[in-house]
Image 1: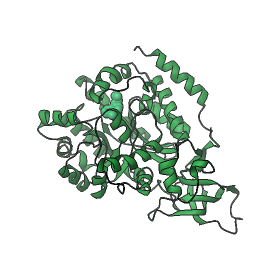
Image 2 (image 1 turned 120 degrees about the vertical axis):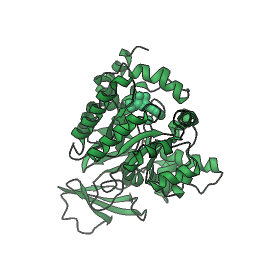
Image 3 (image 1 turned 90 degrees about the horizontal axis):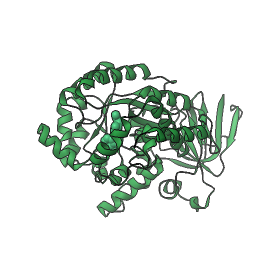
Image 4 (image 1 turned 90 degrees about the vertical axis):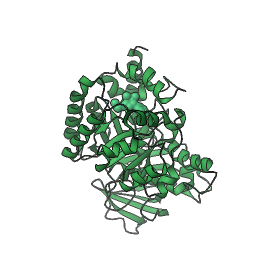
Length: 430
Ligand SMILES: CSC[C@H]1O[C@@H](n2cnc3c(O)ncnc32)[C@H](O)[C@@H]1O
Ligand SMILES: [Zn+2]
């Protein structure tokens, strides 16, 4: 059935960053078939939706997170990364069963849908639960079993699990799920173990995803342990010979930015999580200047404390202006691109999604722009970056299927998920 939305404002985030104040978006069988001015003849379309007073834009892309950690939202605030992980997160995550992962993930999917995220990256354990939730909910995702190399005797079982998960779920759920191989970080996986994971990625022809250079302490420790800073260490282990998405990349020197650029390593910038854990501020303007594909991530709700990517967009536009004392760095259109077009590219699905263009998947969101904070309506991109809270998302479509209609979730039972998520948290021994 071919459908068209007419009279809407289209923020396309195409190559030319075109915005059409009065446009139309047509789609059929999951793909965009028309982007342009409202046609006079609509007889080809079975369904015509009037988008007056609304903005249609590509769905947002969240390129780093751990969805099931939403159960730990607000459980451990105001701590630095290592203490937060070792004394708070890992002891509770050690008690997680597949059911905890299931309900924590659903809780995150609700939040992502409500705030306009249509594609996301997830690194965690019990990933079959995550994949089933993604398949059921209709979102698009790149999923990976995050592998921590201790205890050493568990390494081979974890690698086998990561490999079979990646193999079983790649291109499943009507192609909405892709997979990656993910050693958690250079400080939780030995060099030899990372090499084995790279070899598996090569064999399966999959990209790599890894936390890297998140804190100054991590960098110092890497130098003490291996005589190299994390980027050189991972390059030497062959990680960057695979397509790679690194999360954080906060503590980089000029040579390391060049190294990532020369290996075409993609970066997920997570400014809010980095600020909350006091890890530092990534060198976003310099990375962009060198042509690195940078995207935005929330990290988990345990360090953010929500999955509203509109906050990340605004933060990335503001933070670097303040740090550099320069208002022209990361302009609004660029911040929006990081969260859409570049996000899709960063998670290796850029040919499929990330912009409103004919031939791409019909992954888009509809924003209510009839509210006061969208007016005067002369620059919709500015309002999307600086004025919306993210909760102006009214409709969400992925693969041409509607997942949110007028604020109501069509594929997830929100009341049940909230109740089960609370039950799951109560079960954990704190
Ligand atoms: C087994 S993969 C998931 C693993 O990652 C941990 N984690 C969550 N946020 C961060 C972060 O910012 N840096 C490093 N590790 C992180 C999480 O607790 C899970 O154990
Ligand atoms: Zn993370």
